[in-house]
Image (cartoon, rainbow, N blue to C red; front, side, top):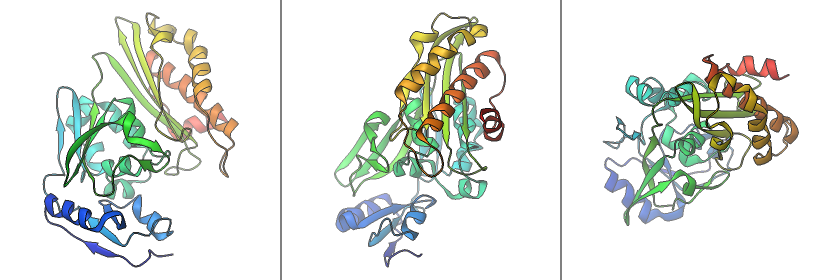
Length: 300
């Protein structure tokens, strides 16, 4: 299928784009990389009358690394962020996650902020925004507002953004000193949506775990973050296996996936527990996290 008839607009400034969105109203959609939106248009799951293309807007293609956050502009592609040495040095979890996003061709075009705005529960980057305690900035002709990740997502493919707002940037919070991070997911084929995915940030100081947070992909309707600090605090990192079962129990208690044609809810819940245990072990023993293919073979 092809999209329903629509009109494309190519503004040359942010002010022009915002005026277009204000004048057109709910009949308009913003497009940047288009890797999430175009398939939806092709299947006619959305039929906007207008597209406002922001790929020509200046000032939205920068990655800024600060003391507290990595700021990513709305035009920055997954590949740009993945390959940014400064972003990796400040927040390795970004690259650790982005290498798992779809295929290289899609990462070359798709934008990280666009993925967040799309709010797909199978998407990796909305969850990473939540896990890092990140924020986004939305602008319209009415002004600017900053939204925490916890306030942005309200359901599958649904956010609190108004039709005339543009997300101009996302800020991923940096972790405290001594934090180790990892991401892994299980997919039947490389590049497919994950059957289940997880990211973990665990702080280790002088051989002891201090705090830990975990987020999930493809098993919750909105990005969900579990605080595991009470389970790991004060425990020796090289004895993480002693708390692994308690971590898995908590994960299972808070994850309520749905069955679909790809996997049952029970299987997705099982896989999430497998990922939680492996990430905790890998990050506290210094072993690298497994690839999707290795993890899937081990979980079968």
